[in-house]
Image 1 (cartoon, helix red, strand yellow):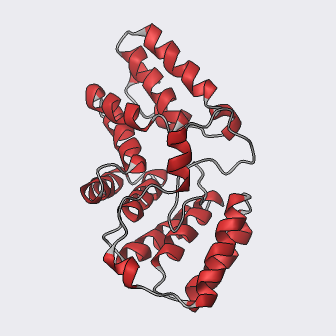
Image 2 (cartoon, helix red, strand yellow; image 1 turned 135 degrees about the vertical axis):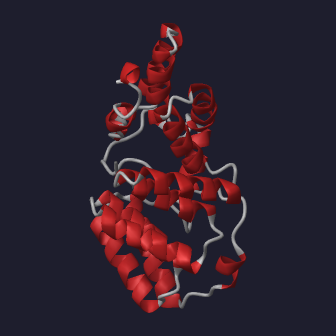
Image 3 (tube, rainbow, N blue to C red; image 1 turned 180 degrees about the horizontal axis):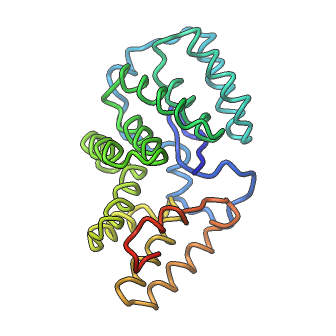
Length: 235
């Protein structure tokens, strides 16, 4: 599972591969560019030094071009210049996920939460890293923490939908996956597996069609490992 930063002072879960999405919905564009409804008081009060801010935005520019190592280098400089720059820690975690350094990402997501535990996105980022490391119970707790802070957090809703599907809580899983499918192509793939399990082949075909339409194969997102974690009938 790969990630990269595109959000303003935040992050999104998408592929690190250099391809173009075939169809990008308004919903997905909004999600990629940042959809937080509120900014925490901690973040509003924090004033990083100019040099740290400059390094942060250079990192965003590099991440937008999928230059993960370069982006990580700028973010590493940002947190040296400002050890309390929570956004830099969180975004650096994303770069590490893109580079396959999940354990390092985990540490930086946790540090971001230590600095500001009231930002929903930091918790969903941490949940994503925990899930990628197979720490499902801990990841699920972070998902619920994220949603308690912002019920519209699409990353958290997607992760919750996936977890519910794994636990065969199908109807509730469908609700969350449908809500997030405009932003996550792989939600359609998981929904196809869910509808197949329920015996609705037509809906399963429709979901796979939407998955292809969003260019999921081009983006390089793979939920095969996720789907294989479902009930036997969904493998």
